[in-house]
Length: 293
Image (tube, rainbow, N blue to C red):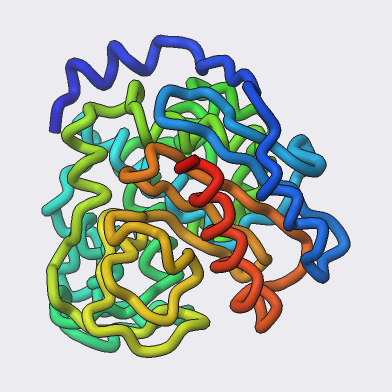
């Protein structure tokens, strides 16, 4: 990892985001069968292309917490507190295994279900083990480490981790735009570290994508799901294979499409279900079509 540059970049203040135009496609959230929804798009240069709904409203993130937790883990790596390939959990699984859902830990149980690196088992337990490992290595509770290492430098004042690093984050669209801008043009981390995080780890492993069934391969990076050729999927038919991000069971998602040069955040207060399976891909395709005009 590249610790010298990372420590310098962390001292810079969070970037200011300015909305340039209103994207008509974002208004499609008004048709979603949800009590409250907000969405926005931020380009790779940090300009907000559009926003709709109460973007300052705090929503439970569910598993959209994981990319935030992963970013904090990568900060810990660059600072030298931990290493990606050091043992961090049962069976000798490493930090890399935990981030890439190849630790072998079960979904919601701290139980080993497979040897590390052999299966893509999506695991909340794995992120909880990761949080405990980083807290032990740094002497700082993981929620506080996330705040100091990621949230505060990015100006994400409305975001908090109120429990499990796998699923208990709370945030706003405005704050997640700052995070999405950071991932597209990293300042807290060396860009090479982020490129590694959004590249496939342990290629070719099959697995179940929650809500969408068995995928072969079921590709992931370090805390980010990678779209590749997955079908069905929560992003759009027009999304590039390089698209990465995460969705949450609380009805939330964040995707970044490098080919479109933009990221989209949508947060709701209705749990993921058939409504989202229908609505999200259509919404994403409409957003991408408008971006490409």
